[in-house]
Amino acid sequence: MKFFDIPLVKVINNMVIIGTCAFTAFLLLVNLPWYLPEIGDGESVVPIFYLIVFVAIAAAVYSSSNIKYVRILSLGSSWLFIALIAVMWGRAFLTDNGSVGDFFGTAGLIGEYFTNLHRFMLPLNDYHEFYLFWWFSWSIMIGQFTARFVSGLRTWQLMIAMLVFPSMAIGTWFSVLYHYHTEALNIAAFINLAMITVGILMVINSLDSLIRLYTDNLNLTAKRIGLGKYYFGNLVVMCALTLLFQLDFLRIQWVGALVIALYFSCFVFIVVKRRSEVMAISGSPRENKLDFMKIELAS
Image (cartoon, rainbow, N blue to C red; front, side, top):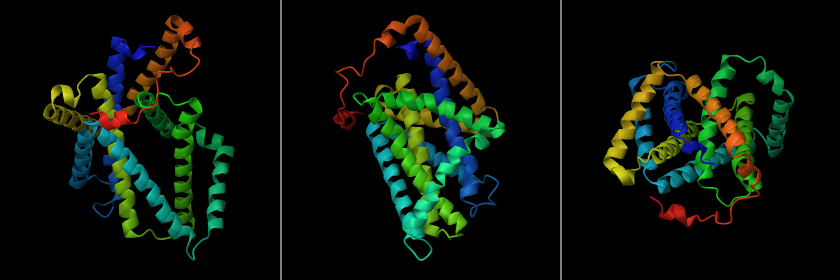
């Protein structure tokens, strides 16, 4: 529909992507004390945490310079997460402390979350506001990034890839963690280190996808402006914006509000100017066929 090609929309959209990218790095910074209390007092941010975030941003910027690196990091972090789940699952349910039946019993409790969903949603408070705006910020970018790589997939295939498989992995993960909590099982030091490593890798993978998206949108790719300018330019921008979030100069609520405005504007745009084209869509164009070799050849 070319909605995101409208100049004003393009500017706002890229502001949203850049802001959310920096906010993701900021969340890593403020949550590191909770994950690594051994380094500090578990509450304050110490210099080593700034260094970790800086390295994560630097790695993400480099990875974003080539779509092949984005793909490798995405697959690598996903498989590491699955391996971590398998190891923790085995330690919890294939030992004297538990059984496979205990796992299914714990996993079955997930259903109670949906029957009590109203208790989690209402009344709305600052906690809900924070996460709702953050999810809004992410949603518009996930849609744009995914749309570039799913040509040829049917709707049900996309739903399975985006919702079913990730939900199964996350459901298993939290079922395992809940069993560790209720049974007061100790988490080995190497498991804790693996959890932190996988978490940081996933943050890097999130950052490189967003950096890749906004640099493509702005035509500031490494191929066009050179790897050196691309790398140091994005590194400086991301580090500066991360610090601005740390100083409470920027807020994710502002970014989320811009996304909501874009959603409503897009809806009005389609109804007013593109209604007939949208109503005529019957499926993905025939020329849109999956070709995974394009990623292998891309740069």
